[in-house]
Image 1 (cartoon, rainbow, N blue to C red):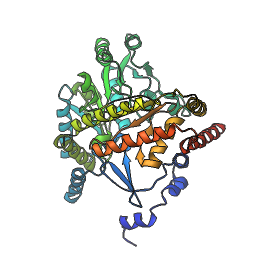
Image 2: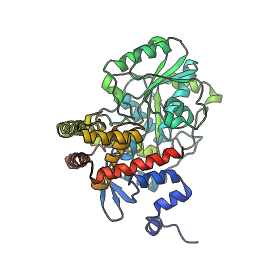
Image 3: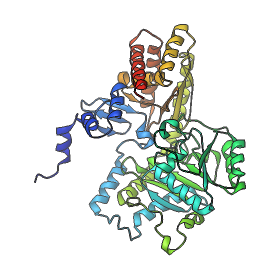
Image 4: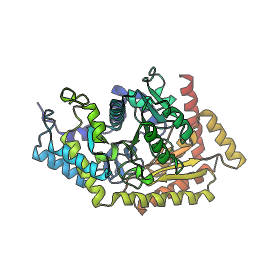
Length: 464
């Protein structure tokens, strides 16, 4: 039998990517990518860039939805994983307490610097949020859990029940009982629910990922205060915002909050090995593992695997040694200021907002009569088509990867790597300026593509 050779396999089959996915995986996703011009075949990634088979570089300003905070294939994390493989470290013994998971737990606790001193490792953000909810219910003995409208916490059933989105929930039957939500940034609505005395936990994204919404200054501190008053645990979902993304180690640091449970994932992986975790107080942790017979009542086979723990340890080291959090804050400030400076030139831009390198650009109806008519035509077909047109043009004409932040929105989102410098910022700002300039010509190629998007959207609606 021929020995497995990864390099030969990739070389011989490269370019079959979309045919394979169409045949064996999600063919609807393939159709979408082809429609919006994102059907590229990437051969490698390095830092802020992806490269196709011809060696063209693509500026990755989505970072795998926030996974690649350190950039792609950071050498320190890569070396640590190679070292672990060379060392033949013991792995997933299960009935054993491994050193590496203990060390990573210790490092996470140090960075939280407060009451939170017990860690559970899992494989993803949605698992971390599911675990946080289970432990909150075990500790409080209460049935209900609240989230905020517009929040996103994952797509497994418990997390999906917290993610109150028609688009994500439709077609999957009723959500789990005991899950509810309150309007965003509304303290009165929150208190009305907490007063009932049956809410185990209130989970928030301090900066909402979909739309990059930032609450008014007093909301989160007062929400935490209300949770304390009514005996409800306060959970901060830091899956995307945590570990430097917003220019602080954790987003809740911007408000000096003291949550009862914090969930993390994405950046913790270093972009190499999936890893998630939630960190909480010893008392909350022990409420689940309440006696010897229940010592593994919450468990996951791969949660403490050695390579994930190594990736996490190396990532935290890089965050510290290379000043990644500070670099995120500085780069994010530059980007927001430069986008907002374009507003005088482009009336499509309503505002740029964000924290650190979690940034949204919100568009608005232009003032020109002709441009306004074209804008309304796109909106009638699908609320997000103008933004998708901009995203696709950034990819086609400038090889920059961005995204529409939410269904039915006029918001483009970027999550640049923390290592983004002036070169990357200049490239993005100049490209955005060029694309919006072209958007001003409603007879130009950009709007011709917009018409194709409208046709695709109308066709899709016929089959719903």
